[in-house]
View 1: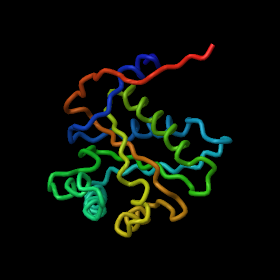
View 2: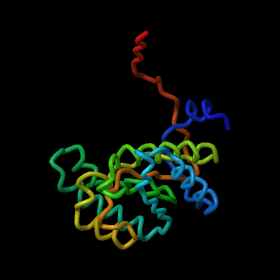
View 3: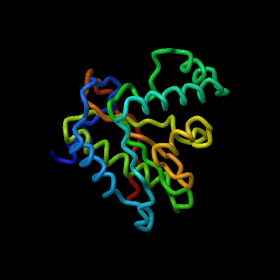
Amino acid sequence: MDVFKAILERRSTRSFTKEAVKKADLEKIVEAGMYAPSAINEQPWLFTVVTDKEVLAKLNEAVKGQMSAADEERIRSRSADNSYCFYYGAPALIIVSCNSIALFPAEDAACALENMFLASHALGLGSCWINQLCGSANDHVGIRSILSEIGVPDTHCVYGCAAVGHIKLETPLKERRGSVNFVD
């Protein structure tokens, strides 16, 4: 797939089928993440691929618990919705964590995630950036205990996740916004 075409066509998917993603495809997606640039080529990341439905359900409940204590009403209200699923029911969640002493871990993780989103698209799969395990969630007791159970070291912070799966509903193209300033 042409890289420019992939960049222009890729959309965040928030409606996935229940069909499992092939392990070979998940391996290709993670490999694309590993080839992302990182500050001074430190490559401080760990990619934790979760397809276990029980683990995903436990993470979802922990996220809802953390959200119920949020200061902001719009976040708190989402946790009260029994159908709320922070990863949109995708059959795979790739958690990107980095050693917290890395030079630029958030930026490194963002580059890896973008590579994985484009790789997912190239494989005909949908993906979505998931941020509910980031920031203060890293210190939430319920979330941290699950992260530890699945092998995310205590020295790592989660900087983003990729929900990955087969697309159930296409996301319509929205007008792109932004500014460009050329200084010649």
